[in-house]
Image (cartoon, rainbow, N blue to C red; front, side, top):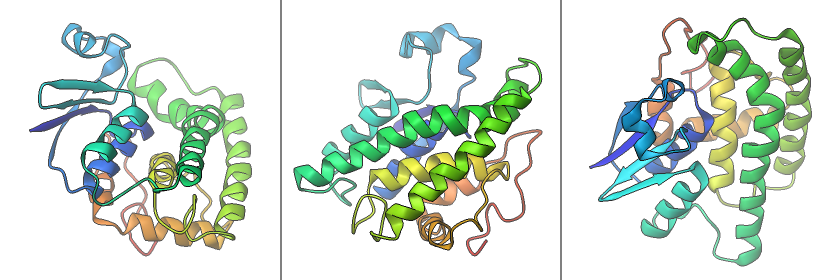
Amino acid sequence: MIRLYHVPLSPFCRKVRLCLGEKKLEVELVEERYWERDPDFMRRNPAGKVPVLRIDDMTLAESTPICEYLEERYASPPLMPRDVEGRYEVRRLVAWFDDKFHNEVTSNLLYERVNRKLMKAGYPVSANVKAGAKAIKYHLDYMAWLLDRRRWLAGDAMTLADFAAAAHLSALDYISDVDWNRHEVVKDWYAKIKSRPAFRSLLADQVPGFPPPAHYADLDF
């Protein structure tokens, strides 16, 4: 049995869930309120962060190493290119979304609007929300630039880079913070990836106090 300790709207957990789903691996999802710093969870990951994956007798932490472990252990279907240049580009884009996009957009929108309430950490900081709403436009423009030149974000095949981007955008889409009309090519890309079987568990997520918009689980928007 594979067990994933996660938070439903965490983009890092969602990236791992997409990898598990794409590789058709059955997983038990255990929701973990990591901010409460439960002693049992802290023993699993002293960093006090999700995701944490329990597989066989191993406990794995940090989303990108987890995804690359799954890629190396379960080779089919592949989520990394064979050539070294292609793997570099995938890793570059994964870092782009998990670092730059996360710091400029996800933390300013999702964490302000949702996480603060869940953690009982006060009200959203309006300046942060405004900064996130401004920054996401730049990132959507960059995605459109890439997709005008490629079938998928990193090249001609779907890769971990697409899952990293979709993990962040799907979490933001849950709270209606993505303007899908800004670029048709980005909307079409998301519709393709949203329609994959691996995405089904994400579309079924429900966070108490935060109902998703009607279009969230609609494969045709």
